[in-house]
Picture 1 (cartoon, helix red, strand yellow):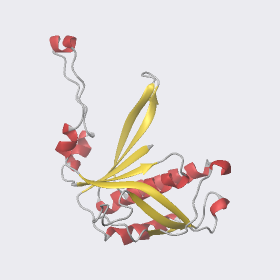
Picture 2 (picture 1 turned 90 degrees about the vertical axis):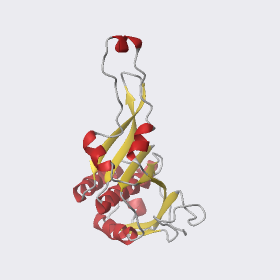
Picture 3 (picture 1 turned 180 degrees about the horizontal axis):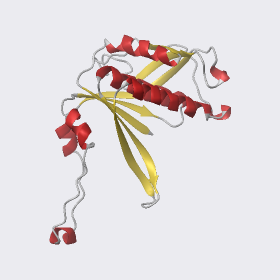
Picture 4 (picture 1 turned 60 degrees about the horizontal axis):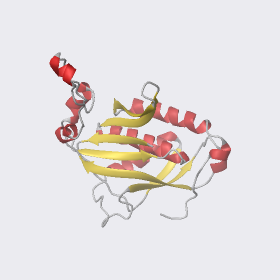
Length: 213
């Protein structure tokens, strides 16, 4: 599973029609659940408080299986308050060995983000997280596209954390990449989405038709 985070200064429901309008630029007609809110994200006020539900039709799908079909996707999602100093204090730093202390070697520090991004993250107060499940075809499309569009519209910072196999350590390691939101990033991401979907065999292509929110 991948996790995509978008760091912003603030969020409002005025962003919802802007997101829908921007989706049209990528050959989709999209509706977002009327229950969804960027502001009232809690169990009492929003039935899908831990997810984002989409109704959509694609104009030029990579697979003819979904041509002219009205589809539904439920994407894992959360919004939380963000403070850079708190986030940095939560990082478990490696212990320095006795030999390193004896030789006065510089202590390794794990940073929350590269310095050029940390300077911008200081002013952000919210983080929106999107979760990509490898077994659901359109999770990839919507998580990557809505997160880049959101970062673009809010002048935010976008990060992806993937698990990659380390040959050296023979284990999975979390690897995070960082980008500043922009229309160029969204365009590049869309091209990657199309390439990804074209590479999925029909037998592995999973989708759900829309039957209600």
